[in-house]
Amino acid sequence: MDHRLMTTESFSLRRTRSLLNLATLNTHLILFFTSFAVYLYMGIAFSNTYFNQIGEHAIQYVDQILENTRKQTSYILDQYPKLPCSTTRETLRVATFHSDYAKDIALFNPKGQIFCTNAASDDKFHLYQDILTRLDQSPKNETLSYTQAALTRQYSIFFIFRNSTKYGLSISIPPRYFTRDLSNRLHDTDIYFQVLVNGRTIKPIKSEAMPLRHMAFHSKQHPLEIHFALTFYTYLNYLFKYSWIFVVLYLMVLLNHLQSKKKQIEESSLEHSVVGAIKKRELYVHFQPIIDAKTEKVSGCEALIRWNHPTQGNIPPSIFIPLAQRMGHIRELTDFVLETCMDMYQRNQSIMLGRYISINIDRELLLTPDFTEDVATLCKEYPCFHRAFAFEITENGDFTDDELVVVERNVDTFHKLGIRLFVDDFGTGYSGLNFVRQFQFHTMKIDKVFIKNLGHEPYLTMLLESMLTISDSLNMKSIIEGVETLEQLTILKQMGVSYIQGFYFSKPLPETDLIEYIQRQ
Ligand code: C2E
Ligand code: MG
Ligand code: MG
Image (tube, rainbow, N blue to C red; front, top):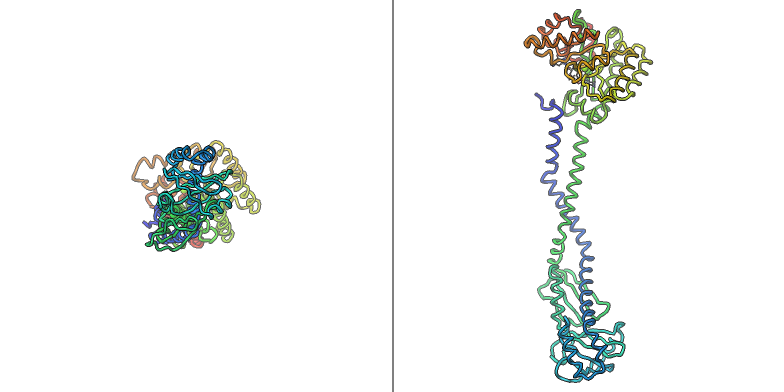
């Protein structure tokens, strides 16, 4: 069997499977590298902001250390500036002990003369003049200096501040305290850095660094600078740190791709192409003769829609009609069949006179008054409409009580218009007897499943006989569908069946072939 001619389920199954294979390895690679390029571009663009922020934070960090140190020690100036050094020294030692950064503390007077230190010696020495000038210029009366300590002869950072009485403290902070803390802070950034106090380097950048870029940050409160040297590894580290953005970006691009691909597939799916098929006229109608069992002459024919898909070939109505239903295009499809049948009837009026074309009407069209109203208009325009056409309604009976009220109203209108209603595929639905009793059908079309093994399974004959009895008792004619053999025909004739439809007489035919078929009789 042609794999294209399968059930609706197998079509949707195929679609589901193809969803999983939407992106090939090549697509993944393209999406990966595109996302990576975008990420790289964005990363480089934002790197300036990123490193600026780190630099500013480092400066703020050192400013904060100095501020804390001042807070931890400034009480000395409030309490002891005028007391003798012997009294004050103990306080200086305690303050040194408790301070996080101060190694030595010295008190100086308004002239800049240091008169007391935490060390035992009572050496008196002066602060440099430029330090005093900087103190005068500083709004917070504080400054930094990087010089040799008088006591230890070691290069040290001096944090010097004074209060409103012009007495002040000079606090020596070992440079390694700053560099250690900053190294810890910048450790996971791979940034080489250098600290300058008052323009003098307290920690040079390592010579092995091969910087791609330099950045400098200045404290607003102190003569302090931090310089960054950004190397290839710094950038690599930064990009790696934010690689999750790349992953999110890639997933978004992939998702977007999958969605558009899915849309593309859906649009090229049968569901969508069935809509196009109506417009592109890929649909056409065949007519299957319905034969009077007594005379073996054509009493009418059933209009059966056909679809010749440009790539998939002939698609059976059992597949594309449910698709058209799902896409909400069953009305367009029925209109197409109706128009085709009316044209055909008009073209072949003389031959078709006294014969009818039965048209399949979907249950959905019975659930609103729209279709019925349009048919009523057609009946007014074409007074022979009700003689030329009959409607086949499938006995699937899955109407709710509310729906049944509407269906009843529509069926009633058809009766008033004189249109014959055939119940299609009788015996395969759910409601059976109830359905046919309720709607006064003109003809019962007995489904082919009851005919297939006729003559070979005795209970089928009984089943058929009881269906014919029902049809008789309800004053209905009967058409037997799916008659393929002479044996079946003979049995049916013996049963007194009124009409036959099946391959034994003819398959569904194009218009010209049907006309020829009728003329040949
Ligand atoms: P249906 O209305 O019961 O139509 C009869 C189906 O039985 C047709 O299948 C016909 O080709 C097939 N048939 C006729 N004689 C024989 C036979 O001797 N042996 C076998 N094996 N089959 C036979 P088709 O054309 O594939 O249509 C299938 C169904 O699609 C129809 O069943 C009908 O329910 C639906 N359909 C067809 N055209 C339309 C249409 O224009 N509108 C709507 N709503 N449904 C349609
Ligand atoms: Mg039918
Ligand atoms: Mg049928």
